[in-house]
Length: 301
Image (cartoon, rainbow, N blue to C red; front, side):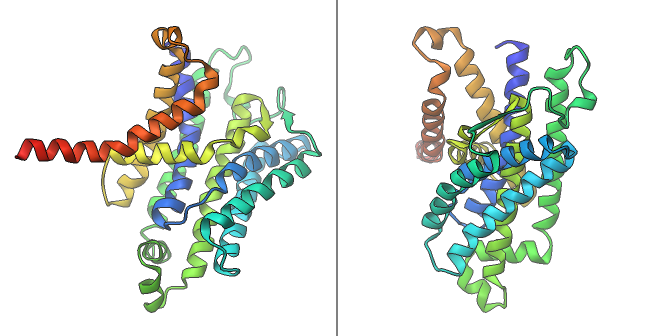
């Protein structure tokens, strides 16, 4: 793997670390199977692109994309808590609806080019782009670190603990006076805001806001969370969020290695096989706990 490919893997891993943190909140903290991610990721990208095209500061445009993602998450939660639609079905409905919403935002085009448009990286990248390969990951890492620290702080507040209690046992939490419906809405808003922020940053690194960029987002987020849990198992929130970030980095580096390895290329592995490789990695990650238990039993017996 070349140095450029390595930094490219780190950059993508950090972007999907935001997605992993969002998926962590919905799937692990709230126990809410949420497929909205496949729609909120490109939502953040297209909102960013339209805002920047209208002259909005790219930093504000990023947070506008995150706010749009938060709204999408709130709609999913509302369908569940108010209309009593099953969580998985509610998220599928919003995901499908967001495709049309995204097309509305872009004016009917599935792709908005961002070549030459302002970005959060622009002030820090040299005129000849010589430092781009390490500056961009560094700036994205700043977003990830801030997001992690805020989540670590939030989940140790009274509201954050109430949200965690809602995910563990909603009936018991409600009996203790927790407004579980509000916790679900808030959690889903934070989850999809992080995912949409990742989409906004992804659009800036690729040079376009593409509606197809959201395909498989939820699978990537789940892969990162599962890999992270297997590498760094803990019940402390500070380590749980760290595990999601580490999982995203490991996942993207494995992808970069698989796509750039000459031996695998000789076997026919191509960039178009990205989703297939992702599925294989998820299957392996899901089987790892069972393999560990089996090895532990054999060692102790």
